[in-house]
Amino acid sequence: MTNKIALIVGPGHAGLGEALANRYGQKGYTIALLGRNPDPLNDLVKTLTASNISAFSVTADLASPASVSTALKEIAQKGDLQVVLYTATMRTKNKPADLTSDLLTESLASNLLGAVTVTNLALAYVKKTGAGVFLYTGSIVAANPGTSDVEQSIGKAGLHSYVIALNKELSKSGVFAGIVTINTYIRIRKGKPGHMDPNVIAKAFEDLGNDKKAAEVQYH
Image 1 (cartoon, rainbow, N blue to C red):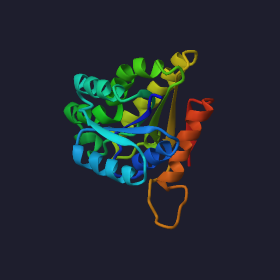
Image 2: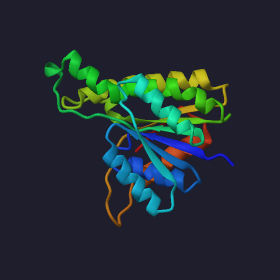
Image 3: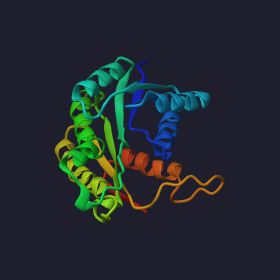
Image 4: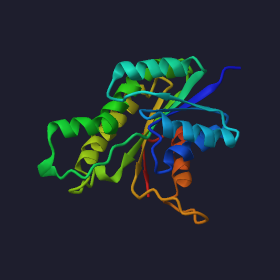
């Protein structure tokens, strides 16, 4: 039986990537972790393996389509890519008046353009499974930008529009695309799970991917 793979792009340090990996790993998926820096990816692989979850990592630069393509080919050799979870993001403190096109382009590689690249290149693999899922991490800053998160706001606003349009295009293809817009901080409070707990937030992703009804879930 071929492995079914859930790919997490940009697991990050806030805990959501790990929570998603645990949730899908417990459902029998082999977890593929994709990011630019190998050390945190490999650390997470060790953590997941200790919990009896099959996992591996691949490195890629989201600003390089060729790099992403190579990584996806490596992933596809290990099983059927059924789920893609895009959690990559880049937060900066640059103020709007200080923002330059170069600074914005750099952050867009994670906040928007990387999602477009991954989707474009992964779609053929996911379509082969017949019922694949693409899920993306949205943010309240898309609609409510502040002076210190304008770059992330621009990227997340673009990502929101992209995913809603993608959902419409793929609606009859058997592949689902959806976005969870997170309207809260992500915080790990040991012994005190609540709405900010990444494990609780991860369930919203799984539910969206299972239900496949709305293109977007507003998580509060």
